[in-house]
Length: 363
Image (tube, rainbow, N blue to C red):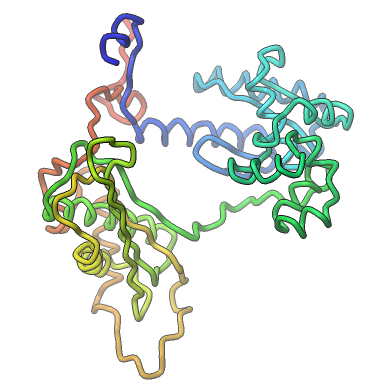
């Protein structure tokens, strides 16, 4: 597509995770200044509690104020959806982005407006209804959000599950999902990337998997938790018409939950040995941590004499302190040095807000 891209003047950018995270933090901090209570849902989504706001101004005006403030302070354009439940708020946000006439803000507190919007919204756009579920619903004649809202909750629970039943109730204005002021801890941590070039050697794959395992374990320690389950997975290009496809994964259960990077790298390499197959050009790999415990909560087996490494906690604290200082990073030897497998980022935009040398210059 290179010639087409150049002919149409299309500009391509590589992923800039540092920039995304910093702008996300600025948006969320701004929202916390504007609303009495905020739940950060993801890197680019948040739920706000607007209780009492309508005593000062209309909710539509307040939504526009949020949008204008974020654009003025940060330069990010956002959509604002206002409704009595989270599911309806997500639907309102969908409308704010889909219909330019809304000017990026939709107030869906009126029941008639809710039903009008749901009538023209595909059921696949409802929060929590994925592609497969929307196909199953279509078989029963439910192809719009309104038809789902009008379905009998008891029937939905019996035919599908309790989660979809809650969705039906939320579409009818019954709040089933409360606002969480404290972001809940992750129940699963995945570290994975597509490789910059195909990997054909075990040692190179081992370095990549070790690097992902180290990153995932660092995130685990930030949650102050320990993981009992470690999974390693690798795969080739699913869409290649000329190369054979191969995908596999293996899991290890620790006798005692760990958040020590050394434990993770040691077991990750052993798992990789189990699933590695020569003769393939691997496109992606990664690790997944599961089954989390807080410190001192796990009850080991009475006949298991496994113990944690000596001074593990202190060593990991020193490692994280240095790595979070912004000066240098300490890596374990298993992670490698050259990292030829890293994601290609030849079109990386400047880190405008996180690097002094890349600040935008105005003449």
